[in-house]
Every structure is written in C-alpha cells, then in structure tokens.
Image (cartoon, rainbow, N blue to C red):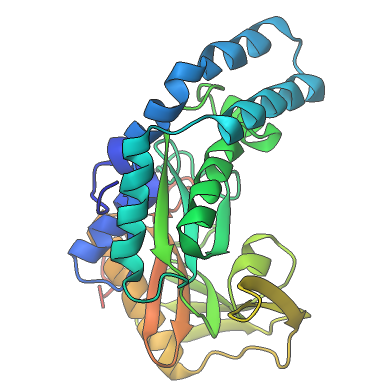
Length: 319
C-alpha cells in the first residue's frame, strides 16, 4: 500500500494522474493505492499468466476464447490467498483512511498501467466498486477489480489497441466516496472534433455511474476558453444514483428534476479543467463531482485521445 504517487508503474495511470493533480493543488479524493507489486505478490504464484497465455495461444479468436480467459482468471483471482503481511497492510491503510468511522463508504477503482494514456484511455473497460464499507468488504473488492482486467471486453480492447492481451499488473485506487449532488465529465478539447478552442462540460444529478455507463443523456454545454457559452442542450435523465448510508449501497431512483448547471458551477469546473490541462501540458478530460459543502472534486483525469489534440491552441487563458 502506498499514498498515490506519479509513478504509473507502481500506482497505475489513474492514480498517478490524480497524484499529479493533487501535487498541483487541485481537489482530489483522499485515498491510497494497492500497488502493482501487490498484484504480482498475490497472483504470480498462481501461474495465472501462463494459463491465460495458453488459452490465447491455442484457442481460435472469438467469444469462446475470451470467455475462457475470463472464467479462468476469475476462478484464480477471486480464490487466490493473500500473504498475511499484505492483508495486514490493507487493514492498516483502511484504518488510516477511515479513522474513527470505519464504515465510511469508499470507491475502489482500477488503475492499470496501460489506461489513461495519450493513445489508449481504456475508458469503461475495467471496473470500479462503489460504496465499499469496512476492511472485510474492501479485501473482497480488490480482487474483483483485478479480475475485470481479464474480462472479454478488456481483453478484446487491448487486442484492438495493439496492447498485450495478457494484462500487465493492475493497481487499485481506494478513495473516499464523494457524496455528489452533481457529477459529470469535462473536456478541454472537443471530444469529437478535437477543437482546442472549445471546452465541453456534461453533467447529471447524483453519482456519475449512469452517465459513464451511457444510460442517461447529460446536460451538454460548449464554452469558449474564456467561459463564453456557445451551445447548451438539456439533460434527459430518468434516473439518478446516490449512496444510501442505511443500506450501505449505491441505489438508483427516479431523477427528481433535470440538472441545469449555473454560472457558479461552470466557472469552477472550467477553471479546474484548465488547471488540469496545464498540469499535463495537453488537452485532458476529467470526471468530476460537486457537493455544496465541498465544491468541485476531480475523480479522474486523462489525455483527450482525439487525433490532433496533442497541443493546446494558443491564446486561451489557463484559468
């Protein structure tokens, strides 16, 4: 276990990016990382890599091959014993993060070394477990995140992207769950055209899951870098996700009212987005959340992967 650092070989792409933002003073969730070394320590003795490689080498391409990999990986990863020292380190890191409230809900997120890069975002290919409470449930959640790296969609994605089908070790980020009233994504270059003079902000009520899963249509806004509004489309959101502290789970309910971001939201999100872009030196997209008590929190940041967006257009303000 370690505090997030900018070393993606240790902490994976997602947590390394958040560490860079936190070091620059941007608001990110508190948390720690189950490092790639823990992945190797648990799974190298199982022979998982060799078993998966044999399936990929001997079976013809197709769904049956992908599902065979998934089945073997899940069986091995979810039942593999952990070294006692690693179990103890996870409990200690959990206690340090949650303090006097050990049932505080956490978000357990994948942080693979190959995701959130300029050429491959791996968006939606891996797994997050939201609303995890207590050290025992955390211990069960980490292998579930590891196993998702061997899912049919993840293996197929890596093969299409020209990456090794057998994944490199996966780190896992463990963070405080942000009780979002609003959440969304934002891009410092247009995600379709690559226009770096146009910022795009999308928002829904509640947690961001229904948006990243593609089950709701967010409010969509396009702004100039100076904050001038260029286009706006209303949300079509029939459900919203919230953490229920009584049930200790994320629940979905009918959305009570459509989101409409006000100037106070847009200015803070825009400034945070452009500060994140300045940290990385290239256009980025971020996942964000908003709560009246805490304001903006950046949950994830990665380079925009639209061709032609490796540089920021001149003349735009940074914040």
